[in-house]
Length: 359
Image (cartoon, rainbow, N blue to C red; front, side, top):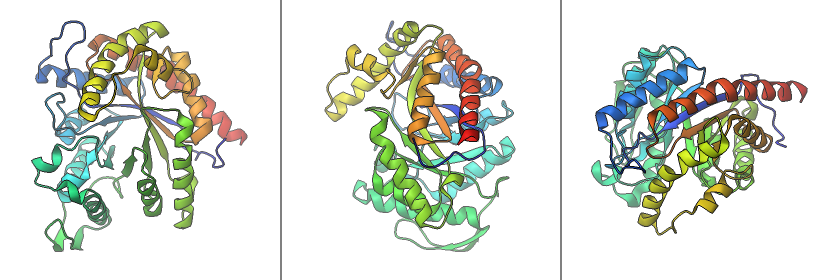
């Protein structure tokens, strides 16, 4: 059990997407980018309607995704939703301009009435570096410098700053200013301890991506983060941790697995070929959706059990699921969103609130 109790704010359940344009596993056909975006906006609207807390959208610059400009898509969602928070997942800050990132998400915050978030990370692909003229050899330095600038931008309307990889700012105004002060910035990590410690030292919320292995293996990251927060003189209970994982729901557990695995295998095996991984087997997938596996795939009661199991490990305040990896029939995705919002999230929030009150 984690040593740190959860803050009083209710546990948050949300979803994220990379807006894939991958082939339908049954037919091999691809829907148009236009239709994919229409489907995505319908998904975000439904997530809002069924009471989910957060929707995140990844940034990718490959032909099998349609989300190279997440802030634009999230802005379209902002005017069609009422309550749900809208986040990048992630903004590849190393290859972007922090001034433009801040302006885009400040604008999103205004459009949404204060619901925007930035989830900053290094990203899982490298296409954006040559696309925007950056050298991968500067990978770590770019992220550190640009994060420093982004945080200065949200602190003050007028900024003076200089660095190595961007033109200096000399008492320049940055507009517009967001509704939220400060505009929330999360740090997303895949398992690098130095990145975890940096988030804690800076006092930024942490998102841990768990897309493989057993969750217990990531528990030291949560401890390291809270220790870094405490060393920096802050209260660890006041800074949330999110667990971000793959998942899918259906009314029946076997149906969820059968709907999810074909598209999941297409995506993961394509990435695997690029990176030298062995193809994923159905047996490995089935193991990953057991209680101690990484994937949240099953019927609502299984997902509830798994969230609560991981909460006992991490004491986290948020769970985001990439609800479907690859192309899954839109109606089935919508049903998965409905189940997560109506049958999973209320149970999880109630149970965790009771645990917190009893702690």
